[in-house]
Length: 359
Ligand SMILES: [Zn+2]
Image: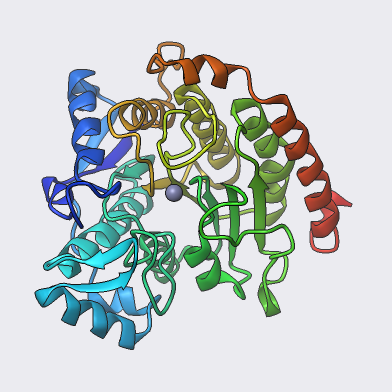
């Protein structure tokens, strides 16, 4: 299987400030690691050059007033919220990130690659129809999904495993039964949403699935949620395409969050997702980078693990950065595991009216 990787040095240009967690080194270190491992020489890996998203693709998701604000603020600089300022030139950076996700989707639809990973910045999943938030400006994932649908792909499963709830993506598809949005995220935590009773609205009731997990949650619980919630839902939904909002801030070294996933845990999660895509939709799968702020100690390891899993490589060599937290992470907090199982039981009961799998 060929795995496409969308990457462009222009993704290193955007920066709110050199000390902001969402800074250019996030990708620079990953790129160094990929080069060090010789990933570009591997025959199963193809590098994809992104294009800027056309404005009409952005307007399929975001309201014209917000698009106008972003373009105007990008000229001299502007402000959205405490975490999210608009540096000059942001508009071009944001279009290239959304276009990078579209490029990944095109590659899979056109069979240029079996699956693809868009290594883009800035991230997108907190961006709503009418505003950016939480380091995000345009919702790259949503722009890509609408693009897929314009290209004749009716139903898309979004799996958002970023440590933060993908509130922007949820809002955009909340009443839409063509998109099944599933999110695993730390709770209570920013942005505060993503409870199990948020299940969608109108025709989209049942098509939003939230799995809030406590700090300390690690590999075993993620694997359990995949097996017991995500896989049965996906089989019943029967998507034409699987899209992953791949936030790498669940890694045990991440400075902003309290989760305990390992690089191997990420690789296993992606291997399960790749298997599910093979089973349900001819392997059609795209991952889009969201958060992840352990610049040196986490991102290079997790991104490599994900790419290895997508390309079907041997995962036994996936390395972990060494640290005390790492040793602890391998023995997941038992109270977190217990609370995840309790949440999963309550969630199944909440979803039973909408999904046979949980009756
Ligand atoms: Zn995040």
